[in-house]
Length: 168
Length: 408
View 1: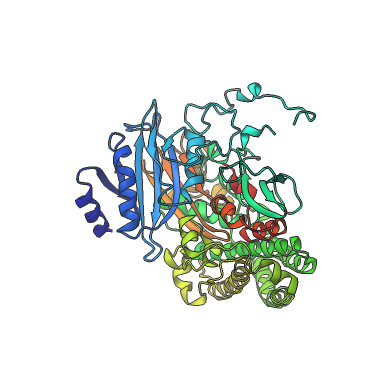
View 2: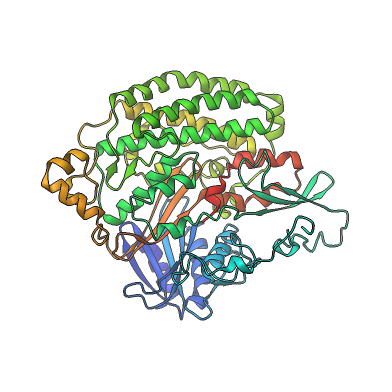
């Protein structure tokens, strides 16, 4: 792990902070630097540090979280299939237009995972080839896993068009 | 359905008017659950396959922010209802990682044994159902007969056949009885013959081999790029098994008992084969573990203040009673660190991970699931192109897509 951090520090000085909890080492990018740096950082981790496996892309909403400065975070869980090491890259984003670069050019698997984060949190991935809703119907207007989305829904379903058997 | 939901006409196919669109599912005998595939066909050949998911709207992750760490087990069970106990192990592995507690040696062994039984259960259903879709009914019946015995074990251990809810933070609901140990030993004695029967029925079955070999090929590079894990990745030559790579529970002590099964074929037959061989390795693990279960408590000690005390401690001791109240009163409960942690285990389908964010309260701030089926289904279109409609059940069956895992 220290070698990886050293490589990142020489290539992206001052762009990220490093933290760790239990066996999870994390590279964190602030909301201001994330859109510019994230893609190159992931590419560096993939091509130069051997983290070739994108295990997961997780969206998080930090609204009213204790001590949180930014609202959204997208966590990329990377793994090295040769050495079984893991590293987590956490990029923050903020309202009103949370936007991050897409990782689809690096990993094909990122396509569905990023679509899910977009569907659930409304984080837009710039450069994604096919950014549509994946779990919710396309008529849906809000983002269900945001913290300000009420548990009983916003009543979107009442606005859905009714399709009869004859016109379907 | 309105057309704009799924724009399936791409640049290559837009001017070809002879292309035919076929909806495969949501309810189709070969999808087993509610999956919808929009197939663009040129005659019998699939030009494009677009999976459409999101029919269940189960709200698992939203529920994870509303239920506490013990309650959420019931939901985790239902994410993959084919091998629920493996999911419970994964969830509580992550929670225990966050809380910083280590379960007792006895609990580690019991969790491993039951999780491996769940893996056998899952692989049997996957192989049996795939064979059934390809016309081999007997193999399916043999597999289901064995599943029945595994359900009996779970019923004897926890009282539930399908959704045991047996795991707790810091241990298990209760210790296993001698009756359960006897059932497990009986199963280990009779199962190898049933396994051999299924292998004999399918391995060199002309129809089965012809319909699976060379179908749905996933190369090693693609398997890594699509983030595939578990048997799907190992059938493509990715040597990655969290039981060996990041050993958890009792696996460090059982390393010599099992091998990682890999293949280089990457097709449906290789995936079937890897699953059947993994069952053998799971039997070896259970055999090695069941004879060496350490004695001692199954839950961590009362003064760790995380486990629900058993009934004797609750009713007969003041410490147990206080801890029971502390854990069940709405405004007390756990006090995990304000931090976040990712924990993953190797379930039957692959890497099941949970990204757990905690705000210090008794419930998770965010309980993100890394579901293997969802990620495997993303690779489905690329595996399907150029094949025929009759290959769809073979590929679906070999990927073992669980619809509940596709939803959030």
